Image (cartoon, rainbow, N blue to C red; front, side):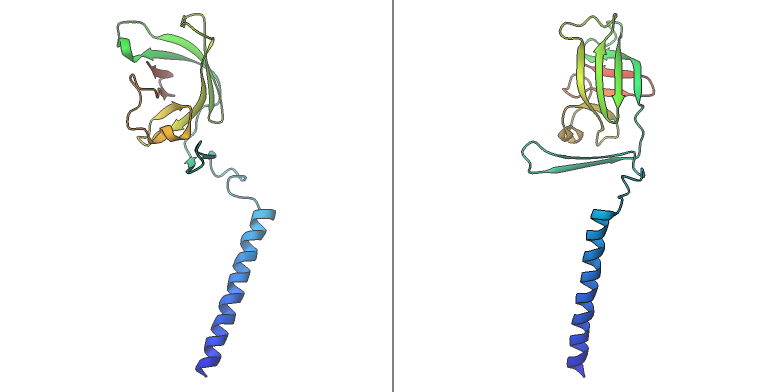
Length: 157
């Protein structure tokens, strides 16, 4: 009797694994994921440059979309110089910041072309790669500017 129970348990486990496996394969090929249904605002999946780590960034917070005028606060000068304005365009989490007539910076018209990501501190940052969400220091005169959507302000150095 014990042998029959043992065999029937193994058959039941095998059938259960087959059903589970076919379910997973079926949803991968024929089903829609929650991302495709719009449950997440965006789901970014990116491998690090050395392909050793994979970053998955899920945010339900919304990033304003479209073209805007923002001010740039230059942290190295404090309040000694007036903020400059710039034009920004955001599509998804991609951002392009360009000079306008008042910006008056040296170099190209495009100041920044990268991503808007939520830092581990909860602040929004301008990033060139996904690893920057784990940086210890942001804003001020670090290499990682902060963007404030409510104030329409970018803290830059």
